[in-house]
Length: 232
Image: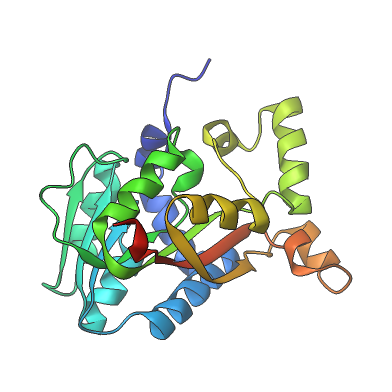
């Protein structure tokens, strides 16, 4: 049995992961979707924490925009890339496992970002609770998770059962539909603002996109949620 965890897996692939933003259409689509959300919802004066920041592409984008950004990732190799690629003193990076052990070192945030991190966590509910506690009243959570309705995801699950491929799937703990995700976020103290789908660059999705609704031909669900102040 593979003894690695998700952090080790990404540690070993940090440079390859980062290069996909230049080489992969799926990652380029991801960058376009996320930065479009940043332009709609985040202002240059915002304080932002990027949980599971990977190689720092979103943290550095927001720091160049003028935001005060803290990027946290469990992978030392990813954080090393973040620091290597940092182009603004408005961004700082630290190694840290999620959920965080303590929140006492962090001021209240305007925005929390969690891009492709919830799927790897055993305690997704605890992570969402931390995100809520990190936010100012009316603060925003921008978050993505694998789309359970995606036909490609269904094929992926079967391939993993039969062939133990793709390798990363062994680390996936959580997926969701738009309905179940909105319900869980609402129960965790958030109000849905916007949800959508992206990452439909695999062969199955590309062929079927003209014929099926977005929830069946996109692999990821992305949402913007506002903290519900009444719970504080």
